[in-house]
Every structure is written in structure tokens, then in C-alpha cells.
Length: 504
View 1 (cartoon, rainbow, N blue to C red):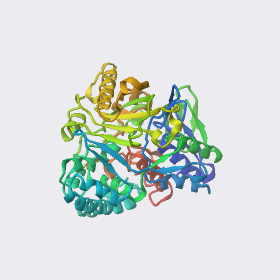
View 2: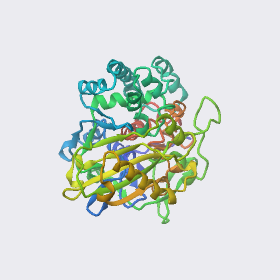
View 3: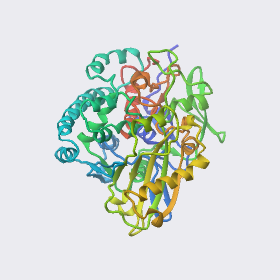
View 4: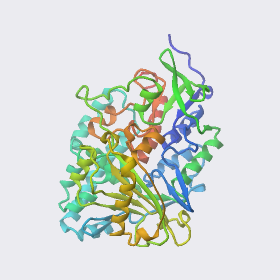
């Protein structure tokens, strides 16, 4: 028996999780006419984009790199508003500064000509190779981002149709294989292979379709939101409230209620039941199935039945202020350790916490002085580490790794750091597991391999519960701010496009 359609303006959608995927989905569904309730188990919305205030220092806890700003502009435009009336996005140059273990530095600049000048300091041959690499990245962007990112992949035919284009673009190659085919200098190879790490992948086994990130940065630039990512979340919260979206904080969902294989609402841990016509889970899909549906997560669709899921690396994040200015440190710094491929194998394959490391440093005070007291700096240092499959004792290793990182930075780009450091604290994969309901404490849900992309990733609509949808890093199109915000557009397409009612 066909369920009678409810008029669109009276349908109620419940969204679980208020990270950027949940926020974007809430706004898109509200623009479609749904009554929307957004649930967040933490005290403030934003998911991983929390803000920490310690001793006068402010730290964005989550994403710090903004690309594809038009994706956020679209959310305001849905309701006839302009993002620029509420937020200021400042372009950064350089995009990143690389500090290599031999002491050399490389600025990845906003201008192609400036970037080529930097590359020539290492290899004149690689300047020509970079132009070819960029051209290939654009070809992949034209297919991967323009044509594939915002469309659902809930049917095998959707994937089959894309196979010729993917083969033509050689997306069976890894990012590292693609980069190495154009560049020869080992440090330039490292610099232009790091993009998969921004979405939780190892460049030596991440499909080269993710090299579209490189052209995405080139096409749109890299920005910082004045006031930080927390300011972006806050203005999106105001936008939701202006549009009548109900936001409930400290609302821990215990169970998704099913009625005849449809999601009819959710049960909160305090016993409150919220009825709805559809549910969107904007978190780790495996957690939804294991904890909220009380059933094992479905196998990922794969060419090889029973293929093991591979999860992204874990993240160790060190936060601190300094009672000293470091004007020569860029807004974004990639601090490379002595090993590259072998170190990534330790993290992703062996799940081993090695003695060496590579780091990403965020210095927001390079652009926004409000992040620290006068004549002080605010720092966020992200260190890729094994996820919790690696059995690392983080109670012991948390403080030990902090000391090692501080010593390494003191010896390189932050001299005198032990003497001026202030208000230091950290998060480990255990915190990601406990605070964000992240399976294995993985920083980006499942890894972006070819066998875990598009149709082979968790689908944006459940295969058996036709009104249960998924948005966020674990589903299509994947992790990173452009990916999770775009996942809301995929949910919108499933609700409004030709696939509505197909059941997945």
C-alpha cells in the first residue's frame, strides 16, 4: 500500500548531528518547506567545529581551512540573504607554507606564477611538471566535482555510467602515483601529495580522483573566516533561527524509532520522543547502525564481497598560546618529518605510533588578532596518528607526544617555545570517540579509497529504511568541508530528484 504523501509544508524532518553537514542539511530541507528539528548531543552546535576558550586564547577545535566558499554563500542565498552581510572571508597567501626536515621551506602561493617561482628553487623541471599536474587536476575536477559530487550514488548503474570517465582520467591510480608522474623532486612530491590527508586518506592508496582538491584550491582559493570557524557556525545558527529551525542542544539520541521499516522519529536519552516524517543522520553511519538502530552496519558495496572497511587515521590535536609573537610563521604551516611514505604506512597500515611525526600548524593570529591577548599568539597543531584500532595508550602517550611536539617546534620554527608556551591542552582519538561518536576515534570516518568512494561509500539513503538519510564525512561525497556541505545537496537531490521513492 502506497503511503499518502503529506503536503510538503507540514512534513517534519529530524536531523541528528549539527556539524556542517547537519547544519547545511537543516537549511536545505527548510528551504524545501520542511519543518526541521536539529539535534546536537553537545552543549553547542557545530559538531567537531567547537570553540575552546582558555586563559584569553581562542582555538577553533575543528576545520580551519575554508575552500569553495560558494557552498556557504549558497546556504544564505536559499533565503534571499548575502553571506557578506554577516561574515568576512579573507583570502590567504600563501595557501600553505611547507617546512621540511632539512630546514628548507616552500610557499604554496595563491598565484600560479609565484608558485612556479617557488618550485624552481627546488627543480626547474618540476615547474613544467606542475603545470601539467594542474591541468590533469582540472580535468578530474570537471568530472569529479562538477558532475559527481552533488549526485546520489544509491544504485550500481549510477556508478557504472561513470566508469569510462574514471578510466579515462586514470582514477585507478593513487594520488601519489599521479603526482609522481609529473614531479621528480622528492620534496615537491611530498608537498603536492598531502591533499588526501586533509580528508583522512593516505596519498599512497587514495584514488587520484581526490586530486581534484588541488584544483578546487586553485579555482576558489583558501580562506579564513574572521572570528574563526566558530563565528561561521554562530552566523549559520542565527540563519537557522531566523528561518524557524528548531535547535536542541544537549539532545543525545538514544534510538531511531522504526515503524514498519520506516523511521518514525527518535528517542532521546532523557526519554523524550520526537516524531518525524524522515530522519537524517549527520554523523558516522556505522555508529548510527550500531548504536541507534541496534544492528550491525551494512557491508559497503564492493567489487570483492566482504572486503574490509578501512577507516581514516586518528588525530592528535595540541592547543596552546604563546606569550611571544612569531610573525614569520604562516597562517597555515605543514611541518614535514624526516619520513613520508614509511611514516604514513606506520599510521594507516601498521597502526603504529612512531617516534617521528608530521604536523599541521594553524596560527589564526596571523590574520585575526582577536584569537589571543595582545602580543600573544594562538596555535592549533594537528598530528596524524593511528586510530584506535592501533591500541595506543593515550593516557600515557598524550603528554609524551605533547612534549615531543613542543621540543621539535622549539628546534625549528618556534624558538623558545618551552619558555613562552601558555595554556596547553590536547585531544586524542579517545576524545574523538567519546565527544563526537567517531568509530575507532577516526578523524574522517572511512578512508577515501577508490573501493570506498561514490557507490562504494555509505549511501546517502539507507538501503532498507527509505526515509532514513545520511550526510557527513562517512557518506558520499566524503570528508572535508566541501564534501560534508555537499552531502546536504545530495540529500536534497534524493528528496526532490528522480530517485525519490526508489528505496535505494
